[in-house]
Image (tube, rainbow, N blue to C red; front, side, top):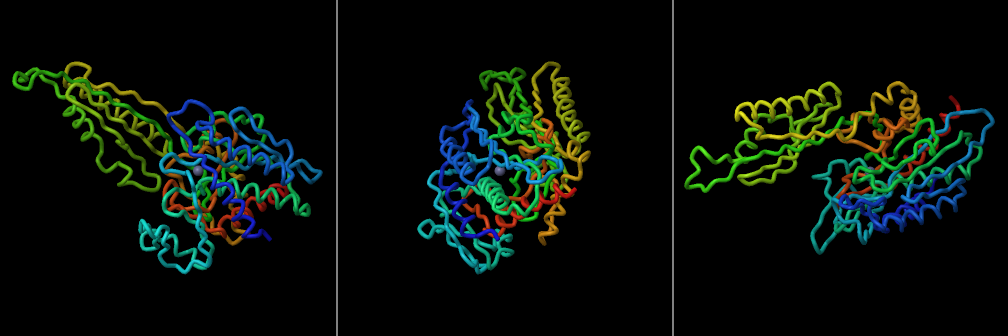
Length: 411
Ligand SMILES: [Zn+2]
């Protein structure tokens, strides 16, 4: 069986290395410190006995576990990212181990009175009796996605130590900069050479995802005219009021805080303005491709309407697509989801299959020719001080990886 202490030790050796990524940087990886963990991972992959361990000039890591059967079976891949979110500091992570969790409040930090409480984070209750790894309340943990890294390496180690488990060729890939949306950008899909892959980057145990948002960003620029307020009658155009009209003309309930499931939204996430110019930044999200296109159309039509009212171009809109729903790339090869679901069920894990209200590297990879659903890595409350992961969920994720390898070779 997989040793709990072994997986905890490996995980801690990764989360204590700071790998925060930086959206302001133009290099890959975006921060130099990501090399610290990347170089260690290369050594660890060699140590456990993987072949073709390779790191490129952008810190993308790939390695191979060769097939141990004669017949030809599909090559599958497992992928995770080693950077952590710039939303919250990942420096000096000091993990706390809560053994045999009693279902009550966990004091993360007594001096700052930071409490991880099941009254607020109800998910905690299901892990009563398990071993939780938390932060000390001052940093994020980095289970997103060093739990995924730990699980993939532990699973490969397990398969190497258990040659009686038959499997085809397995490729593994670790990327930098996922948290700033660039994890897939320099991923060489043809070099990876897998028929399909799974990102181990989901949250709670059981998650299995192959639908995500279609996503675009819109920048709306409103131009006004500044005149001395004492002499402004009939002359001043206040761009902030026009921007307000724009905001109020979009459906008020189609926003992140009023939608769930497969409902899409317009999300105004930034305003800056003065009389002369106001800029609104939106993101547009929808699982349905037609609805997604319709949302973009709504914003363009609204822009045109306001311009017609003013008899000149006071509003300018720029919309850029960001990523698309991987569902259309995964549905033609639905067996790759079925295998993951079967693996979970055979391990008494209830699959939680639901559309992601976000995107994953897997969605970009799917459109680059590598169909790539997402599987749980076990952590909760990503990108902040309340992040935690149960060791038992990480062990289950290892077992899922092993089982997927085994089932793929039997098909
Ligand atoms: Zn992640």
